[in-house]
Amino acid sequence: MSAAVQPVLADARDVSRAHRPFPIGRIALWAIVVGVFAQAFWAIAHNKNFEWHVVAQWFTADSILRGLGVTLGLTVVSMVIGTAIGLLLAMGRLSEDPLLRSLSALYIWFFRGTPLLVQLLFWYNMSTLFPTISIGIPFGPTFASWPTNDVITPLTAAIAGLSLNEAAYMAEIIRGGLLSVDRGQYETADAFGMTRWRALRRIIIPQAMRSIVPPSGNQLISMIKATSLVSVIAMGDLLYSAQAVYNRTFEVIPLLMVAVLWYLLVTSILNVGQSAIERYYARGERGAASRTPAPTVAGETL
Amino acid sequence: MTMTGLSRASLAPDTVAAPLVRARNVHKSFGANEVLKGIDLDVGQGEVVVILGPSGSGKSTFLRCINQLEKMDRGSIEVAGEQIGYELRDGRLLALSPRAVARQRRRIGMVFQQFNLYPHMTVLQNVVEAPIGIHGVPRAEAEAYAMELLVKVGLPEKAHAYPRQLSGGQQQRVAIARALAIKPRLILFDEPTSALDPELVGEVLETMRGLADQGLTMIVVTHEIGFAREAADRVVFMDGGVVVEQGRPEDVLVNPRQPRTRAFLARVI
View 1: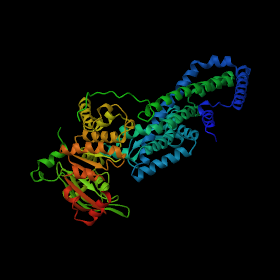
View 2: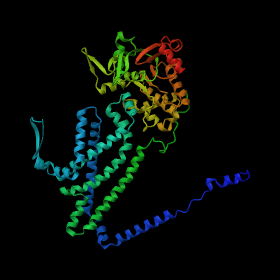
View 3: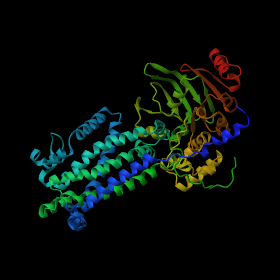
View 4: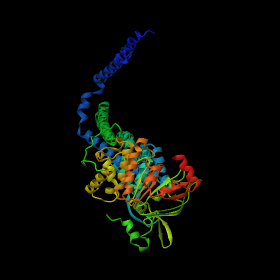
């Protein structure tokens, strides 16, 4: 090879001068996808059977908004109770006490292993199993007693069913999160004389949150939709309210669309919230937005 | 600041001259593997003791027994006259509750091989966590003292950085400041330089040497013979779960009496 050719060749092979091939395949794919979606959108928008004016008419109706409020309220209450019980169950599963470990495992086995709908029906029909509910010493005296039908209303049955079922799932999510934290962090908390509870609250849980938040977001979204099951026990949630309307007006599809749009809207808002929470718990990670260190002490003395 | 745990021991006249740490016949097995086979060791107030020994000699395990991160199988360890993890009541030895053990650990600082800073907290938050949360020091006071300590370890400008933004050597110096922040009566160092890149070892040893000069009671498990020679009041050589030899660094390191010590030093120097 002659020395005169080489520089030209090296220059021509400089990758910064390279051209991209024309992405004909990708553009074709885009055209197809856009076409299909435009057609589908057109079909839905112009389909008389959707009766969009009826959707618009009922979208913010009082009864629908009340139902939405029940759905959101049930979701929040059940999620909070479920997470609290789930945390206790997760700690039980990780406990050194074999009794606590097996009780937690038994709970999770039962509530994950049976359909939520069946659990709700059981709670609602509790009075046929146990006509009265009492507090007292097992096999000993009772201190207080109530008729089950007074205690178990559709509301309490719904909250009990949803939150106890949720606890089983949250327990496994939280347990996974606690296990994801480096062993050394537990040891350090111990070495500095933190109590178990303090170590969890200050050191372990904030770090576990990184792996707890994403699946919990999933759970929350599942929960919003799972609340629609309570319509079978006469609880006036979003779906139940929509059903109540179309049972009178026979506008089934438009009212289901009202419910669908509300469910989508709420879950979309939650997605945004979840990203914000994930960013918060990612602080201190490499690549997270670094703050400029503020020198608070002037001069070094060592 | 008063040390409530210390008061009983220091008021009793017969324990005034007693060592700060007194380990007797400490045994520990992991399954069938007996790691500690009867360790006796006293550490005096203000003494710097460096424990040397080959890997697997049980030196880290022994260190971790002192603040009960490991539970020993036999023997006893006292710190400032209080038995760690147990209490003698009417001639019966009772295991302490986790809460009581946590209380005993409050004035024992520890520096780990892997630093173990809290990654979700800034440097300053790391240092003030125990003083504020466990010792009840007011925030302003704790933060002022923390800044003093960060100056001492040469990192005041990193107070608001997160641990992962620091080098290993800087992280370990923060960990030392964190251990100092609880005003410890004793600091345990568990191979503090073993996880560091070679060029970062010096800054950590420099910081530790400064502490040794200030009369802090330190028990250091390390492979750094140089640190032992310069900073230790006493060198303890462990091998196979027993203390083989101990004494002043100039004796143990220069003229070891035991063949096992000699063989170890020949390998590492």
